[in-house]
Image (cartoon, rainbow, N blue to C red; front, side, top):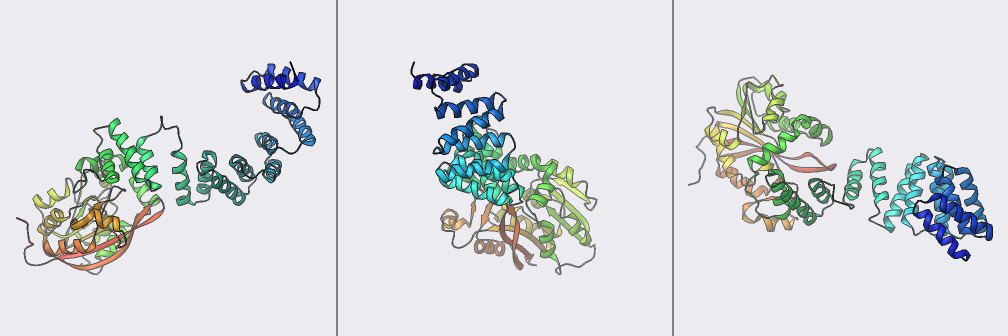
Length: 447
């Protein structure tokens, strides 16, 4: 057998994990041809894999001394040094590899890892970005960059790369729900709809899956989020709701509520107040100083369980809000709806119900998400309705249409504030905070 065939046989055994066969083959090659650089290099790798790393490094260095023209050999040495936690040395070796050939994205990724471990995060970030510039779908670089950015508190950027990494195949063991969310984060709305459709196929009775499929596909969009969606979504979130909403999403509901009512009410506990969609009760402390009787209403039983820890409530009711406003026994001086109308498209029913549940001159305070005039795609979908279900699963409204609906229901707007509602993927979600007063005349109703 000639030298080339002998080397190929040894290399094949090495690749198959037959270490002893490979060891014997490489040694035989070098016995017959001591200048065989590749056999010396591969024998060095094999020694490292067999736990004889120092001998392996010496052999690789000998091979590089004989022929330093192959960038891949430097990369192999750098990987061995990283495995031995010799990151400073590895950095220099990877840099030599890239001087020879700057094109392989994996070498940039490897350099990034070595720099990161050498406490050089800025250099590591640059290396990972270089890898992604050459291969935008490079999984290790994407994942490493997400982790690096997250460790620096750069959550928005980290979430982008984390979602990109999650969308890397294989998909078999991955949640279609999370795949859909990742696609939504990256603006891949059609892909998000595809994964939500898969989620519906796997779990046909899941109301959350159906709602997000409608939001991303724009098929079968309901005039408001179904009760089954609201209950399931918020029941699932109830135990960690306050932490996620306040600490992670920078929710400002209590602060916004205070801004919507301050100066418009007597600062005495004389009023009957409804905290509609009260959730865990975050707004209760804001409303309590004004309340003779404070009622909290929510569809989610588990949310109400959390709200019961707030002693400010005099009454908590499990109910759908429009139905409660229409048929409830109380008349209110103030109805607060924080982050509730984002789950309603057609606001006419709830606005008319709220008007009917308020005393004359009573106040309705609420927040909404709005669309900007330049969003032509919104205008096309919304049409005369004045609302659309966005891919986030929340409804967004045209202020002009909403203003007409308020007037039609018997309200006059007394306060309108541009607000930042919360953050989503670390980006601010803007909207409006509205306070409207019920006119003394009865509200208009539809036939």
